[in-house]
Length: 67
Image 1 (cartoon, rainbow, N blue to C red):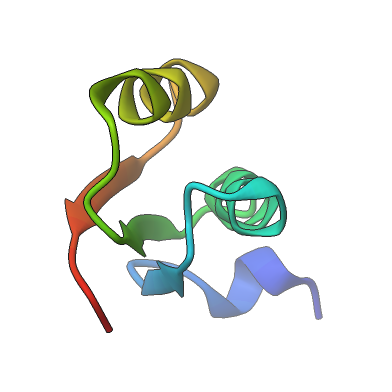
Image 2 (image 1 turned 180 degrees about the vertical axis):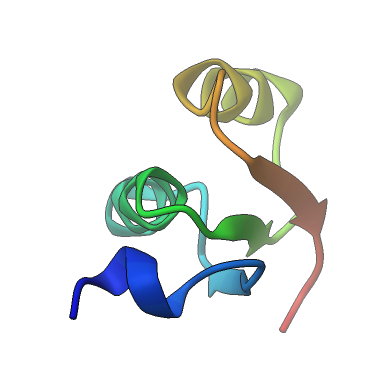
């Protein structure tokens, strides 16, 4: 079975979500049909804006937190 078969209505929490590996993980999970929450330390506004632009059109949200 494909990943999409098992992921309906699921939410993935990706820690370190705005970094390189985290960003790609968010993208792949969202493209597979998951709702994604990217959690990362509060950073500068430019980095968060860049992340938002990279995730445009995908079901990905950002939450600033220290996990």
